[in-house]
Image (cartoon, rainbow, N blue to C red; front, side):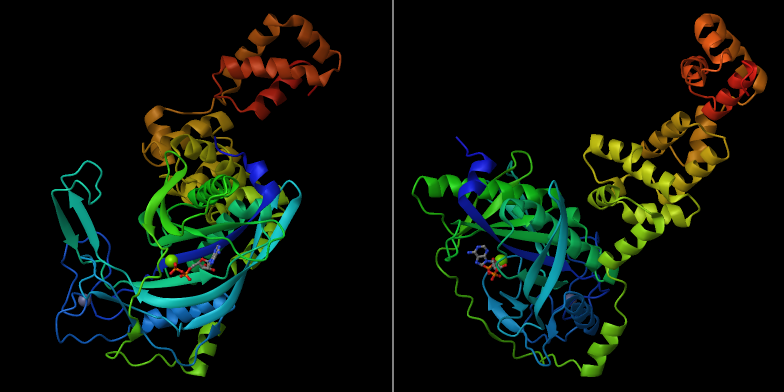
Length: 500
Ligand code: ADP
Ligand code: MG
Ligand code: ZN
């Protein structure tokens, strides 16, 4: 039986190592002029360089270097005045050159850190994640294994190869072993990837879509007895593709390792795969023996030696840090900590900010993105940002509410319609014939009916007990099927009962 998480952290201290791969959003590939556009027909974005044909000569993409330096600077790294590419030799059909051009002992950026915050029952906690290195490399092609049931190579009849992705610039960001997170290790791992993603997004260097693989995380986890010096043996869970999965994978590995160690057995150093459905990992390839990639400096590329003034120019053009931006927004909008954390967690800060820019007040904008929209996103198990509703739609709905043309209840129907792909708010209002009952005589009729049904309540209100009016307003809202403006009903009702 699996150990409880509480038991695991009573006895062991987790150590994390996070490797994040990010595909850069350059127009062309790392070492040739081929397009990086996603979704083209297979093998249409290839040339002798990215196919590794004999005699082809690569040249470094300057924009990719600029982007990588920006990433390094944003992560407080030093930038090497001189670094080289290296060949990492191995054979795999999706890698046509039979080596990956990467960086080995001379990464372009090194020695940085990123501070991350998590919201816990014991208050907000901050951790400094030290960055070992940020280096440049290239992506591989894609293999498709056909004919088998699982899409894996085992049991497949044949494989197809698409080299469009081969040679797309990749940056790898590797942390030092992170200690001291204790029971919060899973949350810290998630917060790190989330913060890193925000930084990469703010830099505009990548579209950072985890679900599409432009940002991928390998999560290394090991345990050691509390108080022990020596690090335990790590496992490396590959290509975890959502923030939630990063957190779950780390937690599940901690529990698995503890089970092994408690039995007096040893953890095997290997890669593992995380499964969304079970929330558990299964073994990949062993890393017990150090692989020999026969790294050597790439003879066909000149070293990278960025001029100091170029680096300073890039530093000078770095955008506002996400953490600074969040603080500014929180102060401007006067948002409580908890709600700020909720917006960050739901990843809707951009949407809320956009909605406010389009004229909605911050409180209303927030409550839509964190309320109804988040609820529907949850139901569909997708991030709110990926729903087909835009800041413009929400701003429009808010404006209609403010003008008294929609009640909250009707607005929820409109929002749901937008999310169900029924069109923009105005189209849905038109199509569904949604409108507020603002005709005073219709409202008065409903009010009189409510008073007749609850004469004792009406008497109380007449006698000056205003809170009792709630029951009557509720009845009127019910009668008008939520299509009346509650404030207006209240006003009319109180006036009718001599309290207006
Ligand atoms: P590999 O090539 O095997 O992926 P890397 O050095 O690229 O190795 O990455 C290993 C990651 O694991 C780094 O983030 C490193 O800090 C981290 N790490 C190293 N040793 C341990 C350990 N014992 N427990 C947890 N993480 C570790
Ligand atoms: Mg690795
Ligand atoms: Zn090419």
